[in-house]
Length: 397
Image (cartoon, rainbow, N blue to C red; front, side):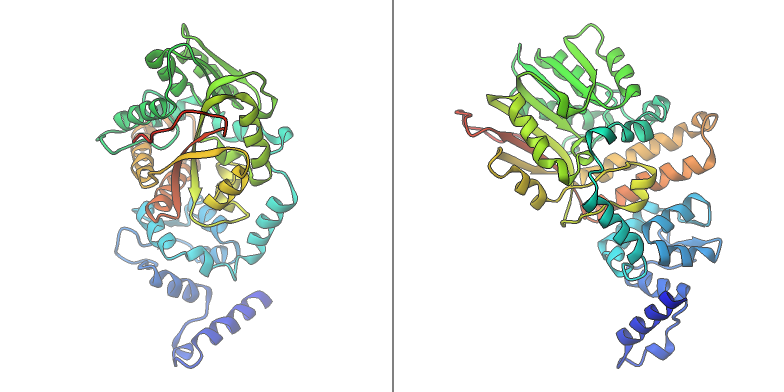
């Protein structure tokens, strides 16, 4: 109650002098209705992006727990929304999380302290996200993804389907790396082997792929059978050897700010002097020192999205930026295509997973889609090299 009284005082100060404080409901539903209205969203309204509340408990959970309460109450069926992607686009476009920070401050502070005080992505913890997310079952990912099993943003500039967007992305990566037959390519975070197979088949390279997921390793080995591809279950920090080219797609989000220096030092150690490194990563438009609490708990434990400032600071005196390509809005199309595939496959998947799992994945895919549509989320491809590289690099799109 003391926390709510403090929030009431804050709201009264906000409306002081406007004549609106006495007319404004300062109950939890009233507070949230005011904030949502600023984003063009209503509770129990008629628009596809409006929130349909089934339990009054929703309001208290959102105010006290922020993102975590919002996601968990959706998973529990306490509210619905026909177009979650459009809802999150509107909420995130107006930075609703900042406006809710006064109420959810305790939970946000715990997140910041957790990331500041502990190395959540240490070698000892490196395999946790594989066990929690990537090992849930290959059937989910096989149903949701394209035939290459690419679990990262497609490149839609000249594509009309998810399958083509992913092939275009894989080929663009290979061209940006200037792959040549006989070269040795290291892939840090190889997923289910889609890029490794594509590069080996189409560019004649020898690939070493690493993953922290046993399920990914098993399927990647099957996908790459008969090709000069090795798939290893190992943490990037334990790698040895020298490679002509290095690539990392959708893995840097698991590295963590405390480990950026050792990550780039590892790349520097493994990359030949005239080589190239391509980093494909989600980015966030402002520097933060925490993760989204709901995503951290249910989807990608120990994850952390980097900002441009955090990446460039870690690269300082380590690697040269040859090219920086942003196509973040393509992730909206990719995520919504994944959602359509997942939803279509649900009658078969529901034999092994319950309704709460379905709502969790719907929330995950569509809230992330809104995140990229709002442009809080970015998708970056950086081409990096050592200072010793003599050749001039020419950007490719």
